[in-house]
Length: 153
Image 1: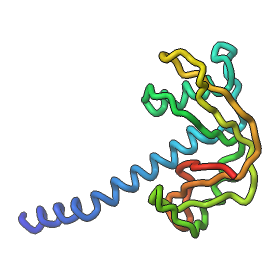
Image 2 (image 1 turned 30 degrees about the horizontal axis):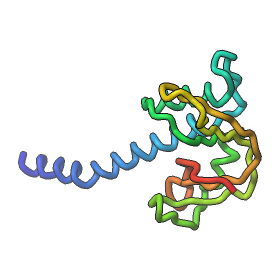
Image 3 (image 1 turned 135 degrees about the vertical axis):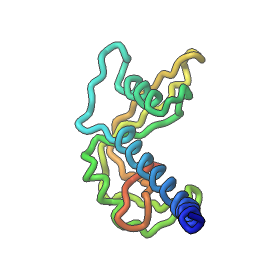
Image 4 (image 1 turned 90 degrees about the vertical axis):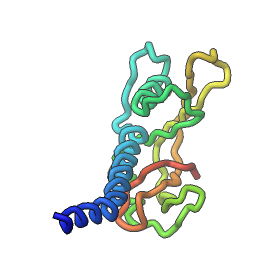
């Protein structure tokens, strides 16, 4: 019985952190897909008073956080088109402690920016539609998937 308990303890100590890390990484990939890819672009009802207000209500609900983010990027391109840029990432972004890359292609995207003229109890956003290259955080160095957008070029 003692060797069995020792074996289980060993597996828990060695594999436990790796499994937790993998679960967090899979959640980050899913969140990227759900919160940063909108293709084809959704049309929100008029009651939301614009695309960004509708989208950010969804983002805040998915994050289960009432905090109003200052800026949020939404790409209007297929997942596969964005995914390919994290397949090989040579750069390591020390500020984020993750691998990162700059896409070769420009993508259509909406930048949702928190409006400065708003009541303190609500989150109102302005949207800017543009085409730009993306700075992506990737899940690892090779055969990775995007986990965040950290800037534009």
